[in-house]
Image (cartoon, rainbow, N blue to C red; front, top):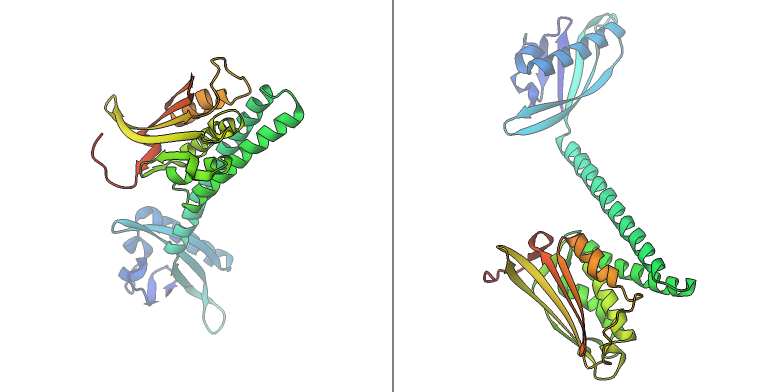
Length: 311
Protein backbone atom coordinates (compact mmCIF):
# COMPACT_ATOMS: atom_id res chain seq x y z
CA UNK A 1 0.00 0.00 0.00
CA UNK A 2 1.14 3.51 -0.84
CA UNK A 3 0.06 6.67 1.01
CA UNK A 4 0.13 10.13 -0.58
CA UNK A 5 -0.90 13.72 0.02
CA UNK A 6 -1.77 16.49 -2.45
CA UNK A 7 -2.45 20.19 -1.94
CA UNK A 8 -5.57 22.04 -3.04
CA UNK A 9 -4.12 22.38 -6.56
CA UNK A 10 -3.74 18.58 -6.58
CA UNK A 11 0.04 18.70 -6.67
CA UNK A 12 1.81 15.99 -4.72
CA UNK A 13 3.21 17.08 -1.36
CA UNK A 14 4.66 13.68 -0.42
CA UNK A 15 4.37 9.96 -1.20
CA UNK A 16 5.14 7.13 1.21
CA UNK A 17 6.08 3.64 0.03
CA UNK A 18 5.45 4.09 -3.71
CA UNK A 19 7.43 0.96 -4.60
CA UNK A 20 6.98 0.10 -8.28
CA UNK A 21 3.39 1.38 -8.36
CA UNK A 22 2.00 4.21 -10.46
CA UNK A 23 3.18 6.61 -7.73
CA UNK A 24 6.85 5.73 -8.26
CA UNK A 25 7.34 8.80 -10.48
CA UNK A 26 5.34 11.19 -8.29
CA UNK A 27 7.69 13.96 -7.15
CA UNK A 28 6.95 16.95 -4.95
CA UNK A 29 5.03 19.46 -7.04
CA UNK A 30 4.01 17.01 -9.78
CA UNK A 31 0.39 16.25 -10.66
CA UNK A 32 -1.50 13.24 -12.01
CA UNK A 33 -1.06 14.53 -15.56
CA UNK A 34 2.71 14.19 -15.09
CA UNK A 35 2.65 10.52 -14.11
CA UNK A 36 -0.51 9.05 -15.69
CA UNK A 37 -1.94 8.72 -19.18
CA UNK A 38 -4.34 11.47 -20.23
CA UNK A 39 -7.47 9.36 -19.68
CA UNK A 40 -6.35 8.04 -16.29
CA UNK A 41 -5.19 11.49 -15.16
CA UNK A 42 -8.47 13.15 -16.14
CA UNK A 43 -10.49 10.53 -14.26
CA UNK A 44 -8.29 10.67 -11.17
CA UNK A 45 -8.33 14.46 -11.09
CA UNK A 46 -12.11 14.57 -11.50
CA UNK A 47 -12.60 12.16 -8.60
CA UNK A 48 -10.33 14.18 -6.31
CA UNK A 49 -11.97 17.49 -7.20
CA UNK A 50 -15.33 15.91 -6.37
CA UNK A 51 -13.96 14.85 -2.96
CA UNK A 52 -12.85 18.44 -2.29
CA UNK A 53 -16.21 19.79 -3.42
CA UNK A 54 -18.34 17.40 -1.36
CA UNK A 55 -16.03 16.98 1.60
CA UNK A 56 -16.55 13.21 1.66
CA UNK A 57 -14.18 10.30 1.01
CA UNK A 58 -14.41 8.39 -2.26
CA UNK A 59 -13.03 5.10 -3.53
CA UNK A 60 -12.32 4.05 -7.10
CA UNK A 61 -10.32 1.51 -9.09
CA UNK A 62 -7.76 2.31 -11.75
CA UNK A 63 -6.13 0.04 -14.32
CA UNK A 64 -2.76 0.89 -15.80
CA UNK A 65 -0.55 -0.79 -18.38
CA UNK A 66 2.88 -1.22 -16.84
CA UNK A 67 5.43 -2.94 -19.02
CA UNK A 68 3.72 -5.87 -20.72
CA UNK A 69 0.92 -6.33 -18.21
CA UNK A 70 -2.09 -4.51 -16.82
CA UNK A 71 -2.12 -3.77 -13.11
CA UNK A 72 -5.10 -2.73 -11.00
CA UNK A 73 -5.13 -0.33 -8.04
CA UNK A 74 -7.75 0.36 -5.39
CA UNK A 75 -7.55 4.07 -4.53
CA UNK A 76 -9.17 5.78 -1.53
CA UNK A 77 -9.05 9.57 -1.21
CA UNK A 78 -10.37 11.92 1.45
CA UNK A 79 -10.10 15.59 2.35
CA UNK A 80 -6.96 16.52 4.29
CA UNK A 81 -7.65 19.18 6.92
CA UNK A 82 -5.41 21.35 9.02
CA UNK A 83 -5.62 21.76 12.80
CA UNK A 84 -8.52 24.19 12.44
CA UNK A 85 -10.49 21.76 10.28
CA UNK A 86 -10.02 23.73 7.09
CA UNK A 87 -9.43 21.64 3.94
CA UNK A 88 -5.80 21.87 2.87
CA UNK A 89 -5.65 19.16 0.22
CA UNK A 90 -6.12 15.46 -0.41
CA UNK A 91 -4.91 12.45 1.56
CA UNK A 92 -5.09 9.07 -0.12
CA UNK A 93 -4.02 5.43 -0.27
CA UNK A 94 -3.34 3.15 -3.23
CA UNK A 95 -3.36 -0.66 -2.99
CA UNK A 96 -2.28 -3.08 -5.71
CA UNK A 97 -5.25 -5.44 -6.29
CA UNK A 98 -3.99 -7.07 -9.49
CA UNK A 99 -3.97 -10.59 -8.03
CA UNK A 100 -7.51 -10.13 -6.72
CA UNK A 101 -8.69 -8.94 -10.15
CA UNK A 102 -7.07 -11.93 -11.81
CA UNK A 103 -8.82 -14.29 -9.39
CA UNK A 104 -12.13 -12.58 -10.08
CA UNK A 105 -11.61 -12.88 -13.83
CA UNK A 106 -10.66 -16.55 -13.49
CA UNK A 107 -13.80 -17.17 -11.43
CA UNK A 108 -15.96 -15.40 -14.02
CA UNK A 109 -14.39 -17.51 -16.78
CA UNK A 110 -15.03 -20.70 -14.80
CA UNK A 111 -18.65 -19.71 -14.13
CA UNK A 112 -19.21 -18.96 -17.83
CA UNK A 113 -17.68 -22.34 -18.72
CA UNK A 114 -19.82 -24.08 -16.09
CA UNK A 115 -22.94 -22.39 -17.46
CA UNK A 116 -22.01 -23.45 -21.00
CA UNK A 117 -21.38 -27.06 -20.00
CA UNK A 118 -24.56 -27.19 -17.92
CA UNK A 119 -26.60 -26.04 -20.91
CA UNK A 120 -24.92 -28.67 -23.09
CA UNK A 121 -25.66 -31.37 -20.52
CA UNK A 122 -29.31 -30.31 -20.27
CA UNK A 123 -29.57 -30.40 -24.06
CA UNK A 124 -28.17 -33.96 -24.06
CA UNK A 125 -30.66 -35.02 -21.38
CA UNK A 126 -33.54 -33.45 -23.29
CA UNK A 127 -32.50 -35.29 -26.44
CA UNK A 128 -32.19 -38.58 -24.54
CA UNK A 129 -35.63 -38.16 -23.00
CA UNK A 130 -37.17 -37.50 -26.40
CA UNK A 131 -35.44 -40.43 -28.11
CA UNK A 132 -36.18 -42.81 -25.23
CA UNK A 133 -39.86 -41.86 -25.13
CA UNK A 134 -40.19 -42.26 -28.90
CA UNK A 135 -39.05 -45.89 -28.79
CA UNK A 136 -40.56 -47.00 -25.47
CA UNK A 137 -43.84 -48.90 -25.47
CA UNK A 138 -44.70 -48.38 -21.79
CA UNK A 139 -43.88 -45.91 -19.02
CA UNK A 140 -41.94 -48.53 -16.97
CA UNK A 141 -39.85 -49.36 -20.05
CA UNK A 142 -39.16 -45.66 -20.59
CA UNK A 143 -38.10 -45.19 -16.97
CA UNK A 144 -35.69 -48.14 -17.01
CA UNK A 145 -34.03 -47.10 -20.25
CA UNK A 146 -33.94 -43.40 -19.41
CA UNK A 147 -32.47 -43.99 -15.94
CA UNK A 148 -29.78 -46.16 -17.45
CA UNK A 149 -28.80 -43.47 -19.92
CA UNK A 150 -28.75 -40.76 -17.26
CA UNK A 151 -26.60 -42.99 -15.07
CA UNK A 152 -24.24 -43.47 -18.00
CA UNK A 153 -23.93 -39.69 -18.36
CA UNK A 154 -23.24 -39.45 -14.64
CA UNK A 155 -20.41 -42.00 -14.78
CA UNK A 156 -18.77 -40.22 -17.70
CA UNK A 157 -19.21 -36.84 -16.03
CA UNK A 158 -17.46 -38.14 -12.90
CA UNK A 159 -14.42 -39.08 -14.98
CA UNK A 160 -14.38 -35.67 -16.68
CA UNK A 161 -14.68 -33.86 -13.35
CA UNK A 162 -11.93 -35.92 -11.72
CA UNK A 163 -9.65 -34.90 -14.61
CA UNK A 164 -10.31 -31.18 -13.93
CA UNK A 165 -12.55 -30.92 -17.02
CA UNK A 166 -9.73 -31.94 -19.32
CA UNK A 167 -11.85 -34.85 -20.52
CA UNK A 168 -11.69 -38.60 -20.03
CA UNK A 169 -9.22 -41.25 -21.03
CA UNK A 170 -10.70 -43.91 -23.27
CA UNK A 171 -9.70 -46.82 -21.05
CA UNK A 172 -11.58 -45.39 -18.04
CA UNK A 173 -14.66 -44.85 -20.18
CA UNK A 174 -14.67 -48.43 -21.44
CA UNK A 175 -14.10 -49.90 -17.99
CA UNK A 176 -16.79 -47.73 -16.38
CA UNK A 177 -19.46 -48.13 -19.06
CA UNK A 178 -18.97 -51.76 -20.14
CA UNK A 179 -17.54 -53.85 -17.32
CA UNK A 180 -20.66 -53.90 -15.14
CA UNK A 181 -22.74 -55.39 -17.97
CA UNK A 182 -20.37 -58.32 -18.54
CA UNK A 183 -21.08 -61.30 -16.21
CA UNK A 184 -17.35 -62.13 -16.11
CA UNK A 185 -16.22 -58.50 -16.06
CA UNK A 186 -13.36 -57.43 -18.29
CA UNK A 187 -12.47 -61.09 -18.91
CA UNK A 188 -15.18 -60.99 -21.59
CA UNK A 189 -13.87 -57.76 -23.07
CA UNK A 190 -10.91 -57.82 -25.42
CA UNK A 191 -9.88 -54.17 -25.23
CA UNK A 192 -7.00 -52.82 -27.30
CA UNK A 193 -6.78 -49.11 -26.46
CA UNK A 194 -4.63 -46.17 -27.37
CA UNK A 195 -3.43 -43.61 -24.85
CA UNK A 196 -5.96 -40.97 -25.81
CA UNK A 197 -7.88 -38.33 -23.90
CA UNK A 198 -11.30 -37.42 -25.24
CA UNK A 199 -12.68 -33.90 -24.92
CA UNK A 200 -15.48 -33.40 -22.35
CA UNK A 201 -18.13 -33.41 -25.11
CA UNK A 202 -16.71 -36.52 -26.76
CA UNK A 203 -16.36 -38.22 -23.37
CA UNK A 204 -20.07 -37.88 -22.57
CA UNK A 205 -21.22 -39.03 -26.00
CA UNK A 206 -18.76 -41.89 -26.43
CA UNK A 207 -19.79 -43.00 -22.94
CA UNK A 208 -23.41 -43.02 -24.10
CA UNK A 209 -22.52 -45.07 -27.17
CA UNK A 210 -20.64 -47.63 -25.05
CA UNK A 211 -23.60 -47.79 -22.67
CA UNK A 212 -26.07 -48.49 -25.49
CA UNK A 213 -23.85 -51.17 -26.96
CA UNK A 214 -23.19 -52.79 -23.60
CA UNK A 215 -26.88 -52.86 -22.60
CA UNK A 216 -27.86 -54.39 -25.92
CA UNK A 217 -25.05 -56.95 -25.71
CA UNK A 218 -26.08 -57.93 -22.18
CA UNK A 219 -29.76 -58.22 -23.15
CA UNK A 220 -29.62 -59.81 -26.60
CA UNK A 221 -26.02 -60.06 -27.78
CA UNK A 222 -22.72 -61.68 -26.95
CA UNK A 223 -22.73 -60.73 -23.23
CA UNK A 224 -26.08 -62.47 -22.73
CA UNK A 225 -24.65 -65.99 -23.12
CA UNK A 226 -21.68 -67.88 -21.60
CA UNK A 227 -18.56 -67.62 -23.74
CA UNK A 228 -19.66 -64.51 -25.57
CA UNK A 229 -17.11 -61.74 -25.96
CA UNK A 230 -16.76 -58.17 -27.14
CA UNK A 231 -13.65 -56.88 -28.88
CA UNK A 232 -13.08 -53.14 -28.59
CA UNK A 233 -10.31 -51.76 -30.71
CA UNK A 234 -9.10 -48.17 -30.84
CA UNK A 235 -6.49 -46.80 -33.21
CA UNK A 236 -5.39 -43.54 -34.77
CA UNK A 237 -5.53 -43.28 -38.55
CA UNK A 238 -5.15 -40.53 -41.12
CA UNK A 239 -8.12 -39.66 -43.26
CA UNK A 240 -8.05 -36.78 -45.76
CA UNK A 241 -4.82 -35.53 -44.21
CA UNK A 242 -6.23 -35.41 -40.68
CA UNK A 243 -5.62 -37.72 -37.72
CA UNK A 244 -8.79 -39.45 -36.53
CA UNK A 245 -9.52 -41.82 -33.67
CA UNK A 246 -11.35 -44.95 -34.80
CA UNK A 247 -13.19 -47.02 -32.19
CA UNK A 248 -14.55 -50.42 -33.26
CA UNK A 249 -16.96 -52.54 -31.19
CA UNK A 250 -17.30 -56.15 -32.39
CA UNK A 251 -19.41 -58.84 -30.68
CA UNK A 252 -18.62 -62.53 -31.05
CA UNK A 253 -19.95 -65.79 -29.64
CA UNK A 254 -23.48 -64.54 -29.01
CA UNK A 255 -26.85 -65.43 -30.53
CA UNK A 256 -27.01 -65.14 -34.29
CA UNK A 257 -27.95 -61.61 -35.20
CA UNK A 258 -31.09 -61.05 -37.20
CA UNK A 259 -30.75 -58.60 -40.08
CA UNK A 260 -33.83 -56.59 -39.12
CA UNK A 261 -33.36 -53.75 -36.69
CA UNK A 262 -35.03 -53.35 -33.29
CA UNK A 263 -36.29 -49.77 -33.10
CA UNK A 264 -35.94 -49.84 -29.32
CA UNK A 265 -32.20 -50.46 -29.59
CA UNK A 266 -30.45 -47.06 -29.39
CA UNK A 267 -29.76 -46.79 -33.10
CA UNK A 268 -30.54 -43.06 -33.17
CA UNK A 269 -28.03 -42.48 -30.35
CA UNK A 270 -25.37 -44.57 -32.08
CA UNK A 271 -25.91 -43.48 -35.67
CA UNK A 272 -26.95 -39.84 -35.30
CA UNK A 273 -26.62 -38.24 -31.87
CA UNK A 274 -23.11 -39.43 -31.00
CA UNK A 275 -21.38 -38.83 -34.37
CA UNK A 276 -23.11 -35.46 -34.82
CA UNK A 277 -22.05 -34.35 -31.34
CA UNK A 278 -18.36 -35.14 -31.96
CA UNK A 279 -18.31 -34.08 -35.60
CA UNK A 280 -17.42 -37.58 -36.75
CA UNK A 281 -18.97 -40.55 -38.51
CA UNK A 282 -20.51 -43.82 -37.34
CA UNK A 283 -21.57 -47.11 -38.91
CA UNK A 284 -23.72 -49.78 -37.22
CA UNK A 285 -23.64 -53.20 -38.87
CA UNK A 286 -25.81 -56.23 -38.09
CA UNK A 287 -23.38 -59.01 -38.97
CA UNK A 288 -24.36 -62.66 -38.43
CA UNK A 289 -21.58 -63.17 -35.88
CA UNK A 290 -22.53 -60.08 -33.89
CA UNK A 291 -23.11 -56.33 -33.85
CA UNK A 292 -20.25 -54.23 -35.24
CA UNK A 293 -20.10 -50.52 -34.52
CA UNK A 294 -17.45 -48.17 -35.90
CA UNK A 295 -17.10 -44.59 -34.62
CA UNK A 296 -14.66 -42.11 -36.14
CA UNK A 297 -13.70 -39.11 -34.01
CA UNK A 298 -11.86 -36.10 -35.49
CA UNK A 299 -8.59 -34.81 -34.07
CA UNK A 300 -10.26 -31.77 -32.50
CA UNK A 301 -12.08 -34.05 -30.03
CA UNK A 302 -9.12 -36.01 -28.65
CA UNK A 303 -5.44 -35.79 -27.80
CA UNK A 304 -2.81 -38.48 -27.47
CA UNK A 305 -1.20 -38.66 -24.04
CA UNK A 306 1.95 -40.31 -25.36
CA UNK A 307 3.83 -39.53 -28.58
CA UNK A 308 3.09 -42.00 -31.35
CA UNK A 309 4.41 -42.46 -34.82
CA UNK A 310 2.43 -40.57 -37.42
CA UNK A 311 -0.36 -42.85 -38.73
